[in-house]
Amino acid sequence: ATFKSLKRMYENCAKAGVRHVVGITLPPFTADATQWFSIVDLPQRIEATRSAVNDNIRDAAPVLLDLAADAEADAATYVQPDGIHFTRAGYRALGLRVAETLEEALIG
Image (cartoon, rainbow, N blue to C red):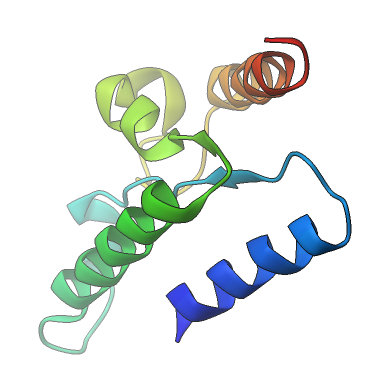
């Protein structure tokens, strides 16, 4: 259902004349971030869902910002020790990546 909704949103934007829609993948959660869940296998299900959504974003986004890959490659910069929230440097890096992605999409 999520993939169909994403694809429909991208298509509706294109029909409305929106030329550049940026799809941003979901960054990972660390094991520490999910330890407080009491339901068995919930962290694995969250990761499986995140991975599937990211695959769909990568396949369908007209313009892609692969935040998941960036955060996985440099977790110390992006993610606080709680495994969920970005660091100040992580938010700066995200802002820079958004600007770079938009610049590439808009002016090549």
